[in-house]
Amino acid sequence: MLLCRVLLGAVARTRDGTTRLDDDGPCFATDRKSELATVPGSSPAVNYHSLLVERTDGKPPEHVPGQVQPTAVYRHREHVVFRGSFIYPEYLLAYHRTDRGEMWDKDAAGLALCNTMSQLEAFAVQARPDSAAAQQEETLHLAGSLGPAARRTVHMRAEKLRLGHETVGEGAERHIVLTRRLGN
Image 1 (cartoon, rainbow, N blue to C red):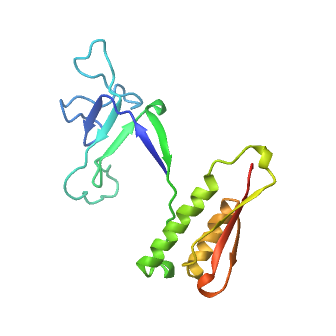
Image 2 (cartoon, rainbow, N blue to C red):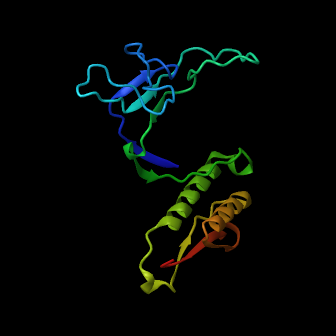
Image 3 (cartoon, one colour):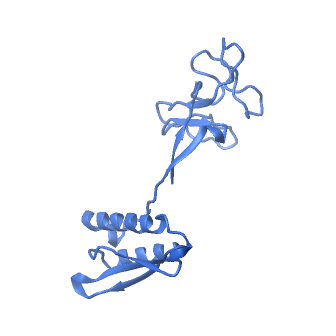
């Protein structure tokens, strides 16, 4: 997931995506809906930079087959920009989504897996030295508090990230060791 800085500029607010809330003017300059309308009173004429679709109160209407549904947002506000140059990716966030299964039965086990997955992702994307060290390997020993299902999840993610991975040790000392070749 990317966490981005977004320049919103002059914002046109709407609930339905067609009419502005502030002055009942149209949101878009054309029927193609590829460019936002001009900001009223701007000189020289300046178009809105972004669209803010406000949440609609109440419940969505019942769906009637054959009828067009109203375009309103019932869950959360939406900010829409039409130019990629207004968006700056600031952070890459790693997360793991799973069903509530055996690894999430206890909050502590779930927290341990989340922490381990964060360590794994950070290890995979750390800056790597130039090719002078291309034949060296770096290792990371992960915490040993994971159960079998959680370890399996970590192994599968490590495989996708092209990291070396193995489980070592016995009993309470059992843990995963990750390896990566430096300079690759």
